[in-house]
Amino acid sequence: MRGTRTGATSTTTGRLRAGLAAAAATALLLSGCASQFDSAAPEGDEPAAGATSQAPTTWPYLGTPLDGGDATRPVLVVKIDNTSRSAPQEGLGEADLVVEELVEGGSTRLAAFFQSAYPDEVGPVRSMRATDIGIVPSGDGTTIVTSGAAQRTIARIDEAGIPFVEEGVAGFSRDTGRSAPYNLFADLTEIEPTVGGGARPVDYLPWGESDAYAAGTPAAAFDVRFSPDHTTSWELEGERYVVDDAFSADGDGFTADTVLALEVDVVDAGYTDPAGNPVPESVFEGSGTATVFHGGRAVAATWSKSSLSASLELTTADGAVLTVPPGRTWIELVPSDTGSVTVD
Image (cartoon, rainbow, N blue to C red):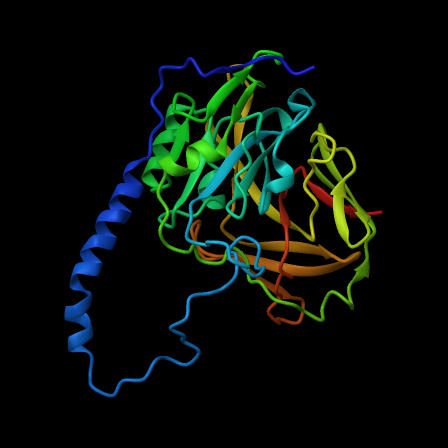
């Protein structure tokens, strides 16, 4: 039985960092100069090919129609523990998109993106890692929800201009029926009004249908190995993939329309955790091999990102652009040295 929830007692102040303030200041400056730029434009100029004055009518982290939703509201990225000690995880079933990343000790942690829905209980909430700089966009109304981080990680997150809120502000609470640090939860309905939004984020993935999946290799089940201590196993249920060894609460697991397994380099983040384990950093930048699973098929591809903050691009073996079908997507950042992807 779940224990009594109590308000967080940490005196740490939740912070929306300088990146958000700088972005807001820049937006005000640009809006104030807009009429000047418009009047200077040569008469008779035509919009660039493909340009449109109509705002996109899809969710940026789903690619699906808004259907009356608001794509300018904040994106909240919750860092969630992904070990047996986190069971049961709460709220994952309402995430738009999830990224799984390697952390110390060979375990993994999740970065769960919420925008189309804000559950009132998500967690257990854990700390940030430097890997998150390549996962979470900056300057587009996206905020990390976290228990905190090592000081050097906070400094790098700040430098990247990614805002975050941590335990100590309204919306965080501890579950007395669980052991710390696996008992911190977030109510996103309380946190959302305290963070910035206001502009639709750029699409996180290259959304679109593709004939490449029908021609892909059959893949009803597959394993993504992060380390000798952790493997995430997927299997097809109907038209979607589920984790068959998930730690999520019954009926609250993430059901993926598409799973992207991206091979990434892992470097030493330069410090150790309290137990003395080196902290890894997955470099989500550059390029690498990819396997994209959708509808029971696997397509081999190459992924690329020109910078940590750039959008992800996918290409097939013949160099064609590979799009991701709209829907819920799970991204696996598979370590190039200790990881592997095996289709059963």
